[in-house]
Amino acid sequence: MIKSEQNQYLESYQLLMRLENGLDAVAKRQGVNFSQYLILKQIIENNCNEPSLLARIFGISRPAMSRKLTVLFRGGKIIKLYNLKDEDQRVTSLQATAEGKAIVTALNKAYDAILLPYSKQNEVLMAQFIAVSTQILKNN
Image 1 (cartoon, helix red, strand yellow):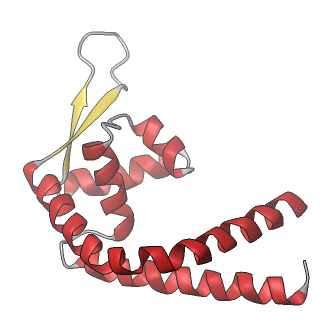
Image 2: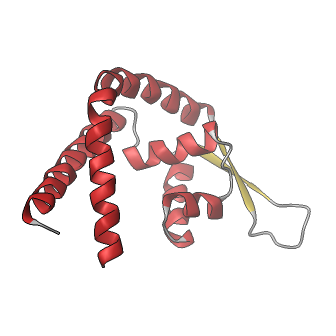
């Protein structure tokens, strides 16, 4: 990778980190972090209600996802529905509580207000970042 591509990648990465930190600050006003919001959003809007499926979507291990879901469960944002039909009691289904749904609704509105005005401008930047990131992954 040439120097200017590397600088472009690093600048893009820094911009994305600032964006994530800003989005996280907005989420914290609702009592969650940005990662928890994304998990709740998957459960509610995409009917992704299995822990193992969520782990695959987010590209993390099942134990890591289990820890994230436990925090949401203990905070009253989700409930766990256990399999009572089969012998395998480890199988659970997830459902957002009214509080979890209200948080996603509020954050969807807040993020739309923040991000929609900039989405067209940043499509090019994001495409460049993805292209350079993909190239780096291929080379490593």
